[in-house]
Length: 514
Image 1: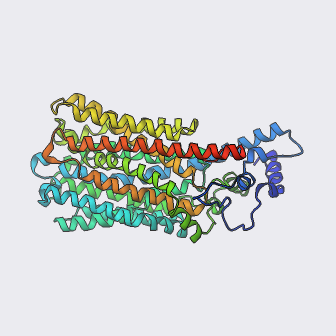
Image 2 (image 1 turned 90 degrees about the horizontal axis):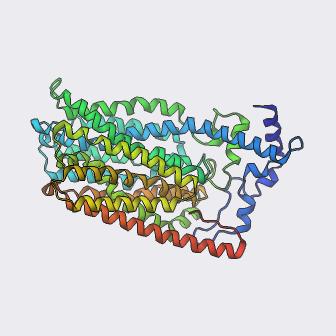
Image 3 (image 1 turned 90 degrees about the vertical axis):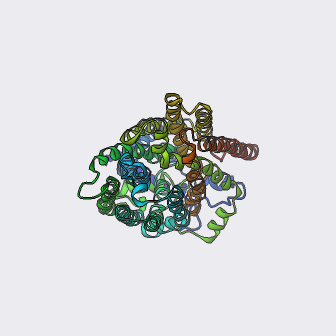
């Protein structure tokens, strides 16, 4: 570290009394009831901005701030390089393993060798196999976040990866509906903790205004998963009957193996908490802790029953959960039925797999751009409202067109899919920005995904094969939930604005992030 930087870090440490005044060092800073307005005085004392607090005898105030900015930015870049690529790759593997059943269902159907044809399962049985995955998802998400906090992210995520990778490969060995349903349930149990766990990990490392773009980079990976999944399925389709196995079996075996192999790497290299990070220097570790104190979760903090009770009884959070139910309906229906939808648009066989790629490729770009705007301009609610509205209108237009208007409907699919996915990062960032203690983050993030999974169960049943190629029920249901989600966003924003006005009139400080 530079000598000037060491002087600054020493000075910051000497002035610790200005950074933290807490009766209990083992507890989170800023423990205010989620059912009442946050106390202004406490927050003003405990929320630390290193850039504003840095003072030293050698440099002027402006020089200190500039040096502190440089140190903080360099640290954030180090954290980004360590945490984000790993998180994105892990979630990419998870999503591909989860959703490739949609590709397997119709893979080589023109030769009678698809999953549905080989196992001789009905459409209803296929839907049940999809649904049982989300049942396990709902049950195990919240407990998984507690286990992640207890055993550390690297150990817990590595265990999850190992188990879901093995189970994905096991799907390639099933021979009837019962086996398919059982393996899908176990797959859901082990995949349940990954996405809320990754979002939870971000709260240990980043400030609220830094999270939306990073949530986007992680949550946008399913768009790459959809693109890669279709392309991989197209290639694996050529392996039909190699060594006596149908191509859909090879698909599960090939896609499950990387998760098993990468679990070992995750165990040794995935970052845990700033307080225990050995890959940071002592000065960097201290700065990583201080820069987020009071506005983020703490790795060493214990989760108390008081925090749990306050989180469960905070009615404001349930509006966040309802919005996530609304966006989860198209999220699951599109990811699981994209090959079927594209097939209904006039593309058949392996060509249907290939044409699922463009909507997801566009979605990745749109999701990142929207998240950057939401972070840069503190416009989380407006970003969510805009994306939900555009997606809803696109679904309505697609459903209103004649079924034989293949090109126009495919073009609208390339609009609806990107904006459906793009609403996820701003909504997650909005939720986590208004959760400022470890207990609330530990519980509210997985609850958001768990309750949202009810929407994913709904999404399973809305695209009916009997309505091909128009699928009016699926398209109009997606539209209704997207518009409903947009209305809930407006209601929640109005609540936060009203609370901020009340706080501003009393203290002159606005607390709730929009």
